[in-house]
Structures are given as C-alpha cells and as structure tokens.
Length: 597
Image 1 (tube, rainbow, N blue to C red):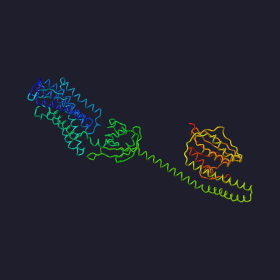
Image 2: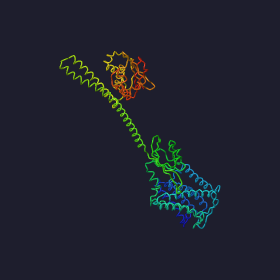
Image 3: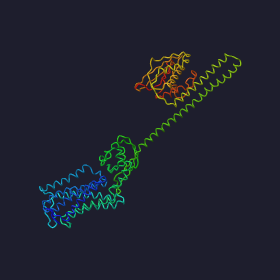
Image 4: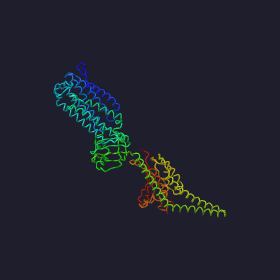
C-alpha cells in the first residue's frame, strides 16, 4: 500500500486496474470473431466492463470525496452500457436477431444516456445519490442513493434477467454435445449478478467495495475460454448455421399468429428481400402476391404438402412446399416450418411433355382420321384405277389384233383410248401424291402473286376450258396474301375444274377477292352459273371423298379434300355459298392471311 498524490494504491486498486486491462485485451480478442453470432456485442460488453473497472479503480484509490465523486460519474459510462451489451449479446447468441429492431436499439442507447446525464448533473438535483462519505477503514465510498439509482437498478437487473433467461433456454435447444459448454456459459452470466448483489446488500468482505466489474472480468474470461476450448461461437447457433442456412431449399418459420419469425439465405435469394424488412411482419403483409398460399396455411393446419406457382422478384416460380407444425415442450402449437423446394424447371419440363403428348395425340387422331378417310375412299379409287388399267390391258390385246390386220385407223383409235386411260391414272396418282405431300411437308408462307398463280392454273386447264367453251371473268388486280404458291395453284385448279364440271351450259365463271380488314385476311372466290347446291349437299363438301353428281362429271372426289387440307395447313379456311337456285350457281372460296399488316 502506497500513496501517489491524492491516490492510495492498494492491492484492490491493482486488481481493478488489472481487470480493466484484461477486459480490454479480451475485447480485442473477441473482436476477431465479430461475424459470429453475438460476439460483437460480447466484445462491447468487455469494453464497457473495462471502462467501469478502470474508472472505479480511480474512484476507489482517490482519497478525497470530491475526486471519488468525479471518477464515480465517469464509471457510469461503463455501468450504464454493460447490461445493454449483455442483452444484445444474449439475443443475438440465441438467434433472436429479429427482435433487435432499430427502434429497440435506439431505446437501449437513449435510456443509458439519460441515466448518465442524471449522474453528471447530480450536484444540481441529487436524484442519483443524496449524499456520500468515505469509509476510512477501506477507503471506499458509502453512498445514500436517490430514486434515479434505483431506477437504474431496475433497468439493469431487468436486462440481466432477460439475458440470462434467453441464454438458459439454449440448454433445452442444443444437443448434448454442447451442454457442458452451455453450463459454463450460464455460470458466466450469473457471476456479475453475484458480484453486484454482494455490493448492494453489503454481503462483502470489504465494506463498500463493488466487486461487479471484477466478476464481469471472470465472466469474460470464461466466455473467452469456451471459445478457445470448444469454438462454440463458430458453431452457434448450430441448427441454423449448419442445417438451415446451407440448405438449397428456401425455409421460412412462421409463428402461430402468421408472423415471419425466421428465414434462411435461400429464401431471401428467391424473394430478393432483406431479412430486416420481413422479419416480424405477417406473411400477408410481406408477400401479398402469395395470397392463395397464405389463405391455405391460415385455414388448414393439417396441410403437409402442396404445389403452388407464384411470382417472386418479377419471376414465375413453381414450388413443392412441405409444411411441418412446430410444438413447444407442452405440445402446444407455436408455429410452422415451411420448406420451399424450387420445382420450376421440373414443372416446365412436365408442361412441355404434356404439350408434346397432346400434340402427339392430335397427330395420332389426325392420322387415324386420314386412314379412315382413305379407307372410305379406297373402294372408289381402287375401282376407278382397276377400270382404267383394265381398259389399258384390253386395248393392248385389241392393238395386237389390229397390228395383225394392219388396220392403221383401228390402231389410232385404240391408242387414243390407252392414252386417255393412262392420263386418268396419272391424274388420280398425282392427286394422291399431292394429298400426301400436304400432310407431311412443312412450308414457309410468303407473299403470293395471285395473278400469276391464277394464270398458271388456267393454262393447266386450257384443253378443258376450250372443249367446254368456258367464259372466265377475272379482276384487273388481285390483293396479296401469305401462302405457298404451288399449293394455291392446286386449289385454283380444283376449284376451276369443279366450276366447269358443275357450271351452266356453257359455263360462265367469275373469279375475285375481298379484303377482310378486321380479320387481316383475304377471301378468294370463284362463282359458277350452275344449278347450285342444297344445304345437305353443302354439308358433304370438303369432308369425305364423295362425288355429288357422278352422272354430270367424272372424278373421284379427292379434289376438294386436297383443297381443304392445303388451306388449313396455310392457316386459312374454305367454304361454299349457294342458294340452290338454278343459274345462280355456287360460290366456292378460301381465306388466307393478308400480307398487309
């Protein structure tokens, strides 16, 4: 024991100074681990404890009441903020960061500052201590405290109690492997409380000496020890860091009131949200676009699995959602754990497969329809081909006889019959090939010069037109449309030949086109002067390979079926208009997309 000016240096003084220095060293050590849960606040705790110990060392060693009160005021810089730091550590360490809102942090800073201001202005109002005197035996200060001190006492112990309760709860949550570390952690929490109780209630070997900062030092040493020995701050909270945070599936914890209690990084990544903006909010407030899912969760607690689609962060997602109810130790419902597995890619693949299957079924149905149509037509075509080929065979036999008799005139007549039958056979074969190509070939639609197409169609039917003395009226100009010229030429050939066959005597045909601006289409048509078609006859057109009036015209009924298939393949439609009035005839048309936007 020795004096330096107005200060008496004793072993307790050296203990307090050592406490302050060790506290600062521990603060610097813990600051290295500040990214781990709660460690930053624990380093703050050691810093404020060190301030408390150092200023209290100056107060304790001072030999005048004025100096003691002066340094006592500064010690409250540590006293007021030590329990605040301890509470922040406890909440963060126990994975309750969602409670640490900006408002709460502001309150936890403002209240200590108010108490510190009251302490520094105590000489004017004496609200914190009413009087103070020196105990000559130990050179300690004996205070008579005012209402401000007891308010600070209540504030401090409330924070300490909340902190201890939160840390003790970890004993129930952590696996057995961590139990020994947590027992040491709880002991570290109770040490400062024990030291303060000794001071306040005078259960003290040195009357008036405050052991609280010293006990806080031992608390810090214990906490640093379990970090060095067990690395607990690198593992805590084990369940979140190792089982939830590293999960690729999005996880959200919802309490029984529908508020968001916790989320993992995968969930934040999908939603594009910051945890600070959604924790503590109701699901309906945080994610209004997920209303259907939220309604299901609210109305039915028994849901365990469902699939939903939702738009998050401006992207469409599909989720397989697994829901587990959470219960406390008393088996009371306390919330839900909701796991979102992103199945967007799988759903997209399933949808593409479904579309492909539908397309395949449609194609199969179309093939079956075509087969049925061809079966229905088989007898007609087979009969016609048999007659034509039979005629050719018969004519060849007759040709041999005429050759033996050297009858040139007879040979010419037989040759004409052979040529006629061969041409008919070629015509039927060509129509069958055209039908097959339309079914199988994909073409690119371009702008069609309809005037050229019509001209070529008429040239192909030149003999038929001349032999029947046909009059054809065409417009001066044709509108352009989108299509495939070779196929459209086949359409016109079929329409013109049918109009000649079923027209008046002589046939008078009128061709034209109408713009359909609302539909962005063009309707092309040909009108004959025949007897027209009844409603029943119109229904048979374009459907099956049938001939309406075999007595009037030869053929196999394949032409209009080809027309229908061509136009539908080009994105248009076909039809006929007729009032069944003799002389007014019928108007056959087909519609194609317009080339004019």
